[in-house]
Length: 156
Image (cartoon, rainbow, N blue to C red; front, side, top):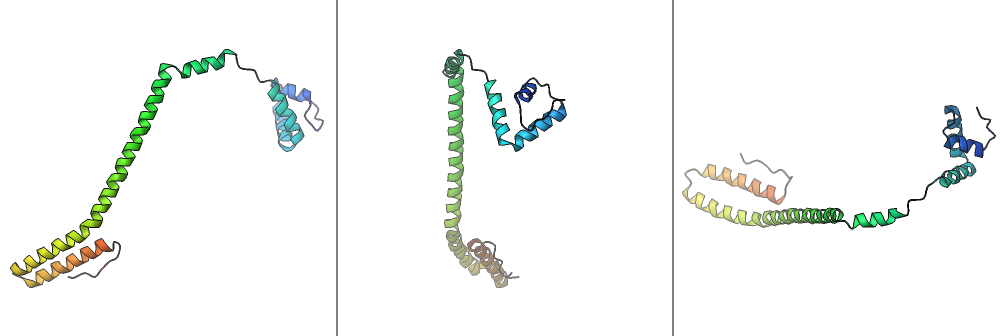
């Protein structure tokens, strides 16, 4: 086991890189790096020196592949898919607006038609009591359409 001097030394960093630290030593090193900014900077600088440079051809290869037919096809599919999602979303919103307007304007039309039906019913109704019950039900229904959630009296 290595002797701990209080800060990270090049010997400890080399042992870390070679994976030559015991579990207890590794925990001690990592806990110290976590609590000491100076050692954390030393550790980061040591790790960065070991990074490899990418091959010179990599940049050109990436550019070449990005201009290839398969990437262009994938890009086109993605853009088309995005347009289709936008189209379907627009259709849904349009349908919701249309249904909302229909419900908004259908209520007065339905009420007007109900008055016509009610007048013709009263003229031919054999039972006036049944007509009054139907009138109450209709008033409750149209009141519910105008003020959803509010409960009105029952006309039984």
